[in-house]
Image (cartoon, rainbow, N blue to C red):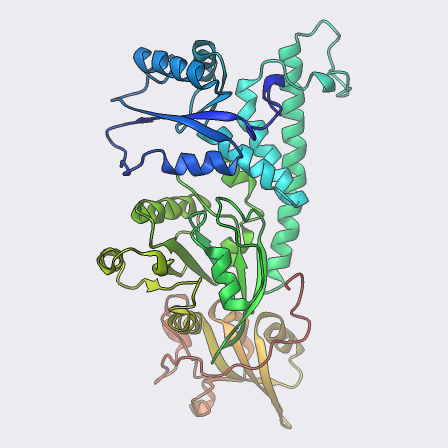
Length: 476
């Protein structure tokens, strides 16, 4: 919650955009272009813009005295309702600026939180946004939540003489505690849902906001999800089935986009929403090749992935919107830095074939295509194969069953311990009863030399059957 004079969002208000650019920051051709898009996404009418270059921020007002005076003149001349700062301000700097210019002042973080609050549609995303807003607002409390001050908080509740600000803080802290507990339950449920897909390949789309992830999902799966040309059009995870020729069905997920200086509290609050990304077999990092700041956007996404602890996952860089690139030289400049990137246009379908082939090849390195001979009485191993892999066929004999299975390399532990024989789907039976284990570049580091028989080699997966019955959960 915010101060009483902040309860309304910035929608339908006249705004002035301002930013301080520091020497160590990259400067775009239009330093306020992204803030302009954020402000218009929030529903404000931008009436003026102002940029100042400084070596360091002013401790009191962030801007220099001259710029503050200039900003006050612009507020009076345009009848602006709000000043939006493309930097993060301290509570004291916000208060001092508001006193100096006479209107509400919000910083970049508060603007992003406002956009997320307006776009949250599910119970989970609303909880996450409320938590992030409260944690942001806590050091900025003045006289908030007065309507809640009559509610009892149990043992230790002070009497009516308690200062209102202290009451507000205690109420806010209590609500933060409750939200964290509720989100922990949501996160636990999400982890169980994702874990139930163990053995099914999962691919997650990540990238800068408005890079075209949802449009790409629609182009690859025909999902028909909303794909609006605005920042943060997607706040909730959507998962759809994607048929890859020569591989079969994988699960493709699209989730919230990232942005430069994404609030840390927001990243933490959306941890459960990003669980699909954390657990994915492969990440597709979608970048807007037409953006003049594409390199900065790619770096910003890597920074958020690092904050989530998933920057070392297998990842393919996808350069989207090549149809909007103004010159081949510009695209070549990006490809020179990222030679393995895959250029596509989700809008007109260019490059989707090579992208699909690259995804199939990458997934083949993470999964093993095996024939596993199992003793007839070893129901535990049979259950393990069914739970963690995809059963392609079974051949029964007097001694047991030979199972053709596609299995994640990480699930090989019990198989190595209990199988009567293991061989590649393209190899002959193991010699002298010694299991001959197929490996791949992605699996080699997880397997010790003792588990590899002579002549074992990596083979690409070449076949795939329909998914097992029951592999549905909430996926459309």
